[in-house]
Length: 230
Image 1 (spheres, rainbow, N blue to C red):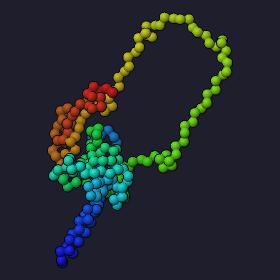
Image 2 (cartoon, rainbow, N blue to C red; image 1 turned 90 degrees about the vertical axis):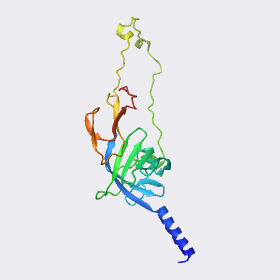
Image 3 (cartoon, helix red, strand yellow; image 1 turned 180 degrees about the vertical axis):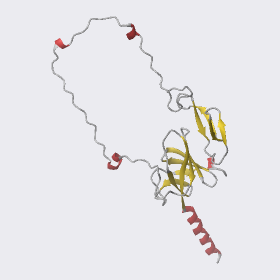
Image 4 (spheres, rainbow, N blue to C red; image 1 turned 180 degrees about the horizontal axis):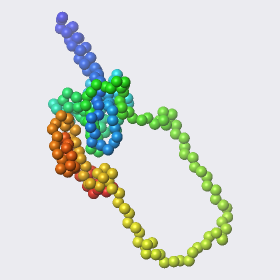
């Protein structure tokens, strides 16, 4: 094999590797969130991007994420972009991409583990809903009911009561009752997880009174700023 042939073969192999795609199935194993989600997601990797897809690598139009080299190292690989969870999502994988952490700006973390797809699973469990109005491109204008008013108002129907002094209850408005924060349920603090704690030893948390993973900790509730009320 001469040098020109060798260079041509090497170039073809590099191009094939560059555009080759890899599809993996990730099953939800833990969630640090109040949202009710379950199932698993097919993730397709191609070049420096990844996206949610069906089992054949075809995108489900949830979005696309791009490799962020500034937040990647030998232990973690980080992708950022759009996904089912919104336009600002972080996919954080461990070294061999067997564990996926979906991290949101509000602090929610969803931990997925690479697994064999269930029988009959052909696409992601979570797919964005498409509105029917967007497909037609036409939104009908709102309708308003026309109110009918009489042309003349009989004077006898308007009788004004004599002026009376307001009662004490009218002078003093009742204080509004505070609403308890739905995120911390009034406790002023919430629990968090660092995500990558699968397989690690557990510990006892004195604050919540439960046996938890090593990555478990508590912070002041960011939604009510530690007040316990909305």
